[in-house]
Image (cartoon, rainbow, N blue to C red; front, side, top):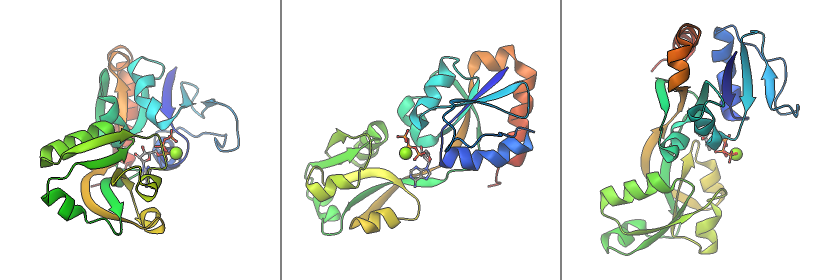
Length: 213
Ligand code: ATP
Ligand code: MG
């Protein structure tokens, strides 16, 4: 049995066509079903539903043989024990720095002020500001980062942006793009060695079906 870890929402929805290309169809709708383990049209493949940020951990420790995780999540996890054969080019967005409309970010950076940055992506944020030589205090949050600059918790946030409409709705402005983000296929290193052929074939099918660069 091959176990594939997915998270509900964007990743699940955008992975469906790739699964279909590998002959994998899922009868259940994860939004309405309470099941966490979903059977598929292929008797040798099942899907487990986990939190987006837990996908690398499941695959690392063999709770799943492979999974789909955003680059944002992978960078925070560190990627230990994971083989990352494929950029699936789905669930695309970017990781950016944003501030309140009325915050003069350029001036704060130029003056060498300490900037308070709230984010879920502590490791990416720390590296980004260290590279720029900007002094920051990082405040770890688990969600709703947009709220931090509005309440005075932080001067800036590091968050994922796609259309920018969430930022705009909260009177925030994107001031730096840190990196482009997309979802990656991750594979347990031992599983790839032991069950080489079936997993290889899955990877090849996903590679053929995913959007081209
Ligand atoms: P959880 O719900 O477990 O806290 P999450 O909120 O990060 O995790 P989703 O919102 O489903 O989970 O996002 C899953 C992935 O989708 C992200 O890790 C990211 O790679 C990708 N993604 C693409 N566009 C966006 C966006 N605009 N906002 C957030 N995530 C995005
Ligand atoms: Mg979410």
